[in-house]
Image 1: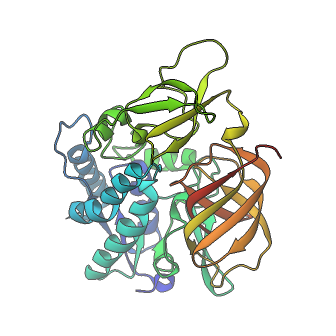
Image 2: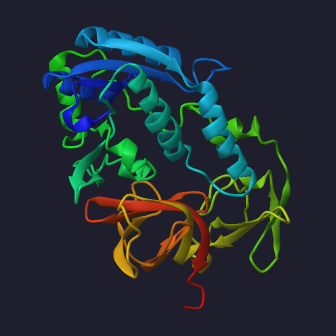
Length: 365
């Protein structure tokens, strides 16, 4: 499967406007385009929470408008085993995982890729706002032109091999241009609202969803000095920097989560949005994925994100290996969270990234 000379491309069709326009653009290039709708979650509650049936109906209508054949496949078992089970395990361990990144790695750019090859495709395509270029003979992941919609953060763990077989038709477009293209084509979903968050959570409160799988395990809320402040429902219901849902009253500034002591089942909190205990100067990430071919030479000055939509932050990679990444920020960062992704950039190019594991605070510096 070589995408550089692709003639048959399988596009992941979700029911949203982005994937529909991606398919239309590829058809305009004269390629044979096939759609594939992936069901990754077996709904066991009402349609208000996870509208896969509605998504499929819209996908079928749009593909009919475009003259694209649509296949459907159920990856729910693979999703449960390789994404959701990890999601729950991470929360139990006191971390805050990013299932969208794991879904890309394990489902969209592995199972989807394999299935597309089974259908005889030369390449796959998605509606992500990102670009793939070839630099130095290597497939290179780059930011999308639309900086407000750029999704390269979620794609750092896609293997170079999978990346070399993937097309991102929307990488050079803005969201406004994509919607206008859909209007011009008369697509049914041209004004459909973008999906947000994780499909299996839907519009409900995240805490309510998580409580179905991780029951309440109350414990103490304390300051870092050990002062008793209140009680929590379970460490997995909270993340670093969180203010809402603590139910802590009293005088002074608002309280924020600054740490979790899993061994003692204690949630640690401090007062003040920019309390030093929330500010991270250094951190270590594990399970790195490198898109640079070889390990980068350190020290390396570059930029980093510790969460989606964060502005690029200047940093120095002080150590890089196949096991860990150590970085130091030029300016301390607020609420960098274990379990989330650290993604490194050089200009518009994604160098790689890893899962945040250890945080070094700037207290006393």
